[in-house]
Image (tube, rainbow, N blue to C red):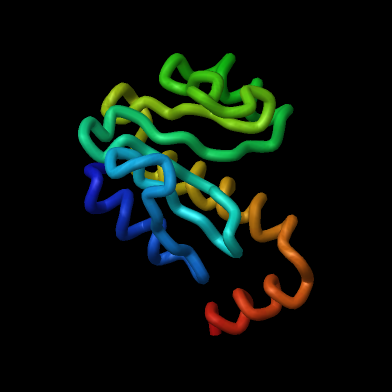
Length: 119
């Protein structure tokens, strides 16, 4: 996966937006105003995704390219290293899981709006 594929995939999720709130080098993806993924635009060596705490620990134990979230709450966020063994399908799965965790915590009305976008 390259930066363009990453960006296209994230923006293809219903209601997803992109921002650079941490400066011009950090690309952030949000849904409902809440962050679900971010990466460094210059290197695209890794990205951060939100994860269920138990699943986050399991992934870190299982894959050497999944680390505690860099500059994030390590209980809820993982950093995934790019080009070190994860398949594109696996990367998309983890991005989707992060997105769905955020959507599940959004207000009911906003979740309904996002479901309408899917149709």
